[in-house]
Length: 365
Image (cartoon, rainbow, N blue to C red; front, side, top):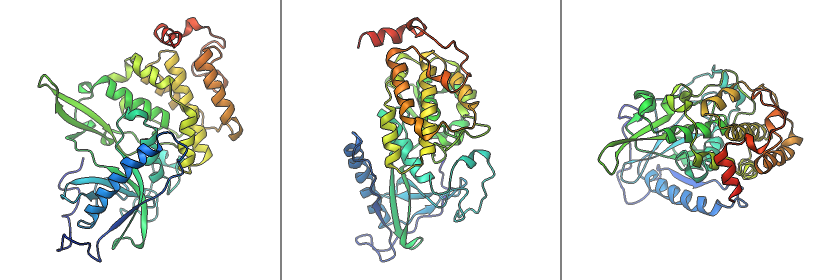
């Protein structure tokens, strides 16, 4: 959680009315997402966010945040309020230009490459369809100024979300079940290899009855979407009581209706490697299979954490999508049987094996 000890005092030019020669400038990095159906909506919100950052950068310079393992900079708005967090692509924990001079010993980092984290931060926002988990708006930008020179620095800029706690500062039993499930299922789809209590923020508010309500906000997704299954995969929420509770019907429908072709389109538009796409696709298929069997988030997570470290092959991506669609529409041949015995279900199934409420939902369409 950011506090007044997390960064140095802000510096600004003496003349607020015009940009100083030493001020910072920002520009949007175009994404190859013109074929994505929500691209115009995303572009509109991202450009408004970048314009706000530009006004702030003419006054206040980026401030290195002391906490964390990699380079992350606080961006202020023109009112001196917290606006966003900028993470340069070449200052992640295992990059040579990391200003904190840390080396990455964690095993989960070995399934990622330096320079990819900024793109993965953006991917997590774009793949959080309908803002289900609440990943803050994240855009790809380049910032120019005294710290980074005329060449500028490319990175992700994520909207700052006001909050009162990090999740590990409070007892997890106080969190809303649906909040936990929404973050959990995003983590499983994206194979988030760095989900801990410090990157789930908690915001307090009052409901209509005046009672305190806690809202969870997931951040820091630079180490999602690995190219292979990492060793010792674990998610903070796996030890929380909500992980043992079943998903509600709305969440199950949301997951079963995800368009994995759309997810592939987004990831390819960001230029991520095919191995990453394959791994995301496979884990998304496991999530959908778990939903069909009415598994809890914890049970699905335990299966995904034990997946073998192997690739399924580039040529199988499209055939895999067809099989997922067959499972979702016909609900017969279980896709998961083709890749791992972890579910330990018989090979052939009938519609009676599907949770009744989902079968009825499908029949009504």
